Length: 354
Image 1 (cartoon, rainbow, N blue to C red):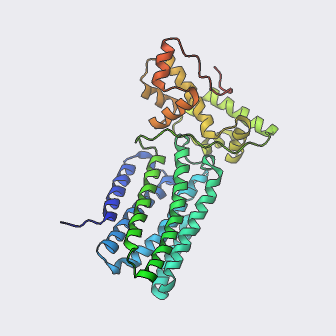
Image 2 (tube, one colour):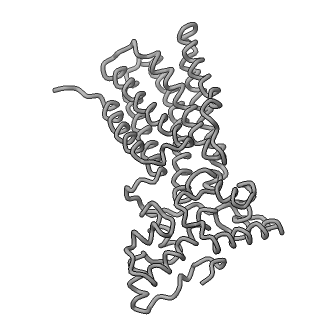
Image 3 (tube, rainbow, N blue to C red):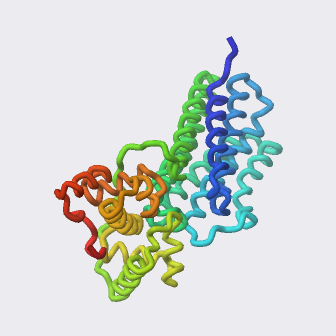
């Protein structure tokens, strides 16, 4: 029987995911290219791990270590770009190459510090990702609002996985010291499973159509007392939503909203949090749901068409948000309304005109 190492299977799945992303037009955007590179790096790393631990190919170790030192910075750079209103040009990302260059030099001149270097790289970038995640989904100003919650969840999973990878390297080092590496292969295989989970989460954040369990976006921290400036920003935004219906733009994100208002993204999110007591994505989605409710009642359009008209791309996100706002599914809402038993959504936001 032909032996196929588990990492090769993981690499195949990652390549399938990469092809699927390349077929999506939005991945041509500059802010998404780092994610493409990240998926490709994970796939290549899985292949190298397969040769190393499946066929005991020791000559591949330097390449595996250098690539590992590149994956962690690439993960950080990919998500960090989502926190910027304008993504950094690729040429300005060169400092993130320094860890990989350092590991390559260590392999050439001082191999004893390679293991420790990788641990510090993964731990440092993992903690850095946790730090940028502290602002919640609203901190990812360049992420499409339809998937901001999933993008933030993917960021958190990636941060934890990088830290877990650092810890697994510690366990591998201890295993080599105590048993000569008897359990190292199993530890590496487990690490590949973690990588696969990361990529699954990233795929969900990219707006795949795979079904998911209903989830509730974490509420923003308890807002402090709103200021007059917050009230003015919120009123301007309410007017923009009602008169121009910008919520119907499926690519809408916090950065675009801020540019339309001529304000910093932080000012917009703070005003929404303080005045309406919710995140920007929840705020926008409630406008979308009210529009969808109106379309379901006034037209005979299929639910999927109503979803797209309202500004949603993911059916799972639409169904989840519709249930959160109205307490019913779109189909149930339409059926009950046609029977004359449903009024307007009881939990619709007060700032939306009935």
